[in-house]
Image (cartoon, rainbow, N blue to C red; front, side):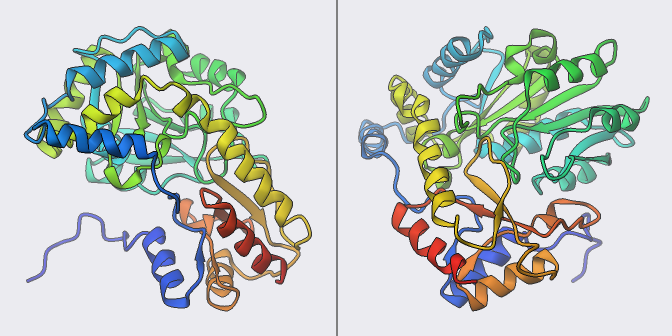
Length: 380
C-alpha cells in the first residue's frame, strides 16, 4: 500500500543517522544531545516513591496541580512573571510535543512563520503539516547573532508567528536584552505570535543572564514559552516538558495537546514537583556545564579545530576549515568512521544546506568521555 506523503522531503533525522553510525563504528557519540551520566538518585527515588504510593493512573490533561503550582512559583522567582497555574501552564510529553501543539494551535493554511537558521529540525515539518509556510532568516556567521534587519524584511501581512530558540541549538548563542528589545519593536502593533524554545534556560555561561521572553510582559502576552525537565535534570528519556502561555493561547494549545498526548507520566510529574523544591539542582546547572565546556575546550586547545563562542546549551561548535574543505556531512562521517568521534553537521539545520565547515559537538558527557574524545580529535 502507498500513501501520498505529507512530508515528502523528510527522512530519518540526522541525530538517528549519526548515532547509528557511531554505534556501528564504535565511535564516541558526541552527536546526539543527551548526557551519558545518570540522573540524581534522589529524583529517581521520588519516582519510585510515587509509583509505590499508587500514583500510576492518568494525570489531569493540563498536568498535576502540584507541578503546575511549582512551575508558576519558579517562573515568578526567576523571571518575575506571574502565571496562573490553573489556566496558563500545560505539562507536555517533552518539549517537542509542546512545540508541535503550539504551532498546530496557532498556524492556519497560508500563514507564514519566521524560522531563524540554523534551526532545530522539529520546527519546519510541523509548520508544513499545518499548511503554513516557513520563512527563513539566517543568523550571522561566525558569531551567530539574529539579523534583525533581515528579520524585519522577512515580515509580511501573512506573518503569524516567529520562532526563537535561546540558548540556541546548535550554535550555543544567546539572545541579549537588546535582541528582545528589537523583537518588541518588530511585533508591537501586530498580531504576530512568538514561540520561544527555552529548553536550555538554565545552561548559561560566563555570568550571563538568560533573557527569557517571560521577563518582558509585552512579549510574554503574545508568546508560547517551552521548557524541558529532561534538559534540566539529565532525564531526556522521561520526555516531560511544559508550556507557559496566556490563558487565551493556552486554551487553544490544550485543545491540541489533549488529542496529541492527553496526559503525561503521572509518577514522574509528582517526582518533579517535589524535586523542584531543591533550587540548587537547576540553579547549579550553569556552573556544572560550564566546567564541562571549559574542560572540553582546554583538552582540544592543541588540536587543529577552532572553537566558536559558546554562551549556553551543552553544544560546542568547532570550525574545521584548517583541516579539510570537505562538506560538513562528509567530514562528520569521516571523523566518525576513521577517528571514532561522532558529531552533527549543522548544514542539516538550514533549508538550503548552508555549510560553514563547522561541526556541533555535545559536551554533556562524563569527564572521561570528554578526555578520550578530545585525545582522538587532537590526533586529526
